[in-house]
Image 1: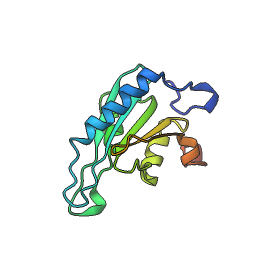
Image 2: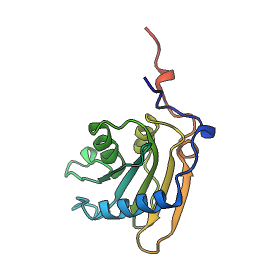
Image 3: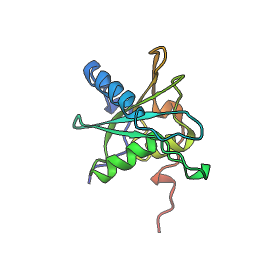
Length: 147
């Protein structure tokens, strides 16, 4: 079985072409967001290690704690499709918001050195960080006691 947890030196950044495909997919996914309560529409797209892109969008709920962020929706869709290794994620929103703490932890389950791109859909500003920068010392399988 392949270890999905990786180290910074093992993952090269995605190509410029892949980054552009990923960003466009995140922007497109944002069009499907369901956000009748906050009106904060977010799209996310994951780049798998074989070059496929899996999209997700936020899905709000009147019971706010049941809301699903775009990043977690993309991860769930990818896992349901058989993908467990991700190279990068792009997140599109007004203001270019970074992923919340819960999304950072969910993404870290699949590799702490994922490339994270945020896009402000108003002015086009883009930022890139490594997930390990956004969530240092993430809780991982090594923190779970062995039986």
